Amino acid sequence: MAGNITRADILRAALAILDSGGLPALAMRRIAGELGVQQSALYWHFNSKQELLAGLADDILERVPDVVGDTWRARVVTLASTLRAALLEHKDAAELVATAFAFKLGSKAPFRRFADELHGAGLMQADVETAASVLLHFVLGYTTNEQQHWQAATLGAIDAEGTAEDDLGPQFSTDRFVSGVELIVDGIDTRLQGPHPSA
Amino acid sequence: MAGNITRADILRAALAILDSGGLPALAMRRIAGELGVQQSALYWHFNSKQELLAGLADDILERVPDVVGDTWRARVVTLASTLRAALLEHKDAAELVATAFAFKLGSKAPFRRFADELHGAGLMQADVETAASVLLHFVLGYTTNEQQHWQAATLGAIDAEGTAEDDLGPQFSTDRFVSGVELIVDGIDTRLQGPHPSA
DNA sequence: ACCTGAACACCGTTCAAGT
DNA sequence: ACCTGAACACCGTTCAAGT
Image 1 (cartoon, rainbow over the protein chains, first blue to last red):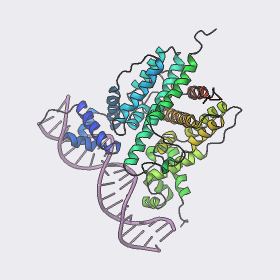
Image 2: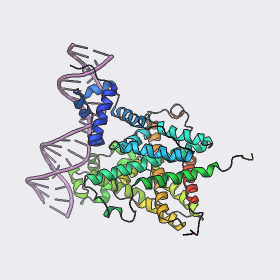
Image 3: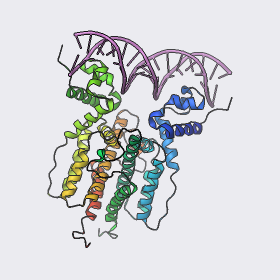
Image 4: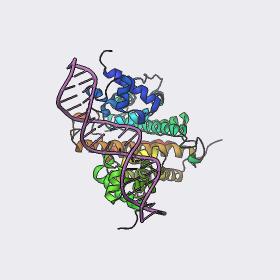
């Protein structure tokens, strides 16, 4: 009936399924079903499910807007917060992006975003890579935990508050996230103090 | 013939399978097969595979030795390196522990280890939790990527060097890892400068 | 070029029934 | 208390064949 299916169609259907049911619902059969096509048809457009997931991760990351700010510190904190916000908009997106990043499939874009800001701040290259790595791992790790915590609470697997928090305090909030980013930024600042190396 | 199977037996068999084949090989049927038992027998000892994996994660983390050092900085860097080393000893262990941690099943032990060192350093409680969180996410995130990179290279999916590294430099090494930890530690140091708050 | 149909080789989990 | 046997309801991937 309708014309052929495209990669974009597949990714759009996959994102809708992710939004409604998260990663556990994201089966090849389900995506195909939503498009009115056989599951094997997807393998003409993607070599594997992992490749499809990497494409999804890239799509989500492309929606992260450019950041503005007067100082590099402000821009780095804003970039981290913006990235977290983009991930929180889609169920399981943090885990999805973290996995795609670990597998080196696409999506080194967020690493580059951090690296560019830090390079612009005057950090030397070795420190740029170290700092970008620390920032990215914190954003992905924190947001993954946060998202899983929410969803577990929604399913009733963990009671909404108290009990499971023990002595760790209220674990997840924008303030806690920003505190972590600022701690890292203060560490970076430490590397900017000596503008004229003697040797 | 032999006596009944125990939780410890199951975890021992699971760890052996993890070592040889990684997480993809760790199927309930495989664990049961190794113990000469039906897969359903495992469900008397564990309510789910996730619970079993959490137990495995705890086992791996229990092998992390206590750290010594003259300064809190030295102890924190050593603890991070020791944790990484323990994870690198078992295939896919970093991903396993990161997932168990995200799911809040057991294993907040490493968080506490970092928190205790930082508390001893004189950091105030809110900063202790922020800093421990940043440290733990970096250790788990970096080591997960490192371990997956190695294994992909071993399987030939990524050529051993060059090419995939592009402009990111040599991505994984003990030095790079320690640099990241030291950046965080410098950020922490920043919070220790005002010993007598005025209000 | 793009998709169907059908199969292959797996999964985790449940549950009555045995001992 | 601990385990068997068998089923349920799924997976990702491949591949000849169609159009």
